[in-house]
Image (cartoon, rainbow, N blue to C red; front, side):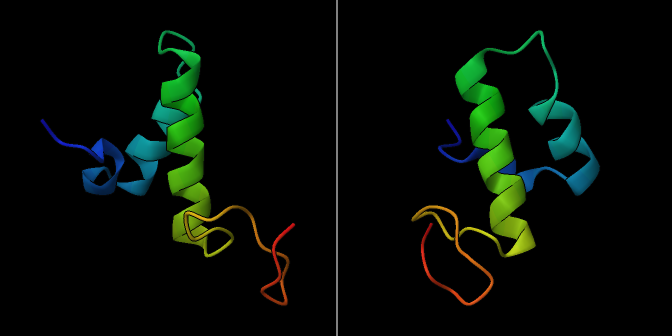
Length: 55
């Protein structure tokens, strides 16, 4: 079982997963977290301000 299924998704697949209302809430939240991680806004320790400080 893949512990982090979103890492193997393309960006397009990830966006679709994040907004797929047929998936449960937790799945969609995890997809959003991966989007933020890829964008450099989060690193797994929460969201960050542009200067690197945590929100």
